[in-house]
Figure (cartoon, rainbow, N blue to C red):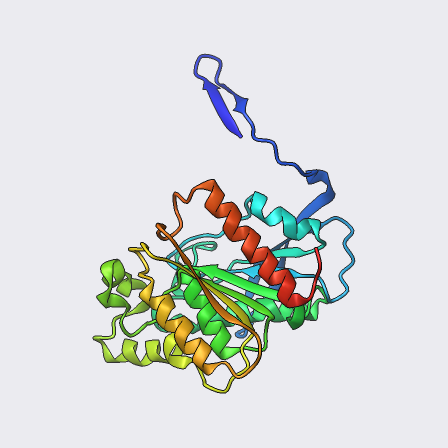
Amino acid sequence: KIYQYNIKENISTVFKESEAKFDRKNYTLEQQFYPSKDGTMIPIFLAHKKGLEMDGQRPTLLYGYGGFNISIKPYFSKTNIILLENDGVYAIANLRGGSEYGQNWHEAGMLLNKQTVFDDFISAAEYLISKGITSSNYLAIRGGSNGGLLIGAVLNQRPDICKVAYPEVGVMDMLRYEKFTIGHAWAVEYGSTSEEKHFNNLIQYSPLHNIQKGTHYPSVLVYTADHDDRVVPAHSFKYAAELQEGQAGMDPILIRIGQSAGHGAGKPTRKIIQEYAEKWAFMFYEMGIGF
């Protein structure tokens, strides 16, 4: 909605509203809490059809970010309607590293505490499964930028947790990230390899350096773009190649390289539609679901 404000009367009225072709009354959004590995209660938002029977086989997409003091709040997205219309569940986990509960929440997931973010996300996936909402065969995980790093790390630590994964424009080489474009500015969040304690921490979870050959990884669709000057595509190029080399199973490891595109902002509508059509088709196909 776009509102216009009348200064004299101190009121706001709707100036223009785009039409979303779905009935919002048929859907619900609820906040729940789950325990992470260390016992901390983590909030998670779940969106789905009202009255949807949770039979352990609901196609579910779990999204996470967990970093840079950014709060991930519920929002409306037309691109996610197709999941809800097909009896799916959309989940957003409010991981530590964000700003949901202030600076302490942020600091609990940065620098030497970065593993906490991965633990929070893995615990979110386990919660969705334990509650009978979905199972690993019907769970997809997604994150972009710092969230792409999250997905890459989780895939190495728990490759069995999901069926489909979307690491998007992710920071995958944690030992060299400072050498590319603006990467040096992220050292306050991740730590610098020039300091021994941070090097020893970064190498423990760097997605590129912790891929284990002979591992059965789930179906993975890596996203990057040829003109991304924030997280350079070299991160995703190297990561996808290494993951393809390490894959022991039959599930595909693919990479989609956006043409004449950057980190995501300002993308034209036609490209957004194309990308999300591919994402949902990939997810449903790999889960064996017709739609």
